[in-house]
Length: 113
Image (cartoon, rainbow, N blue to C red; front, top):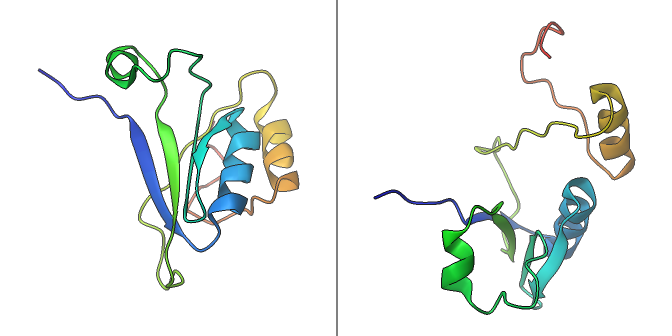
């Protein structure tokens, strides 16, 4: 038996803002939202209520953005690697920066693909 990654959970101070960024970056939609929690993911169609069946299928994980009162004080311990689907890496970086992403120095040399 194995497990399947079904959700990525992110504690944050702006769930709506982060959800909007990741929807635009990944082509996701808001699947569910309350004042304190926003779930985004690929559209699952009208039969999404059958969650057990959906989780048995190969599907990209949804992302949950949960409101927490405390601000981040140390380095993130999770990062997501994105790969462009239909453009160059430079074009995708520019698009993501236009959505609000910022460059971070993670020790890359410039020789990476």
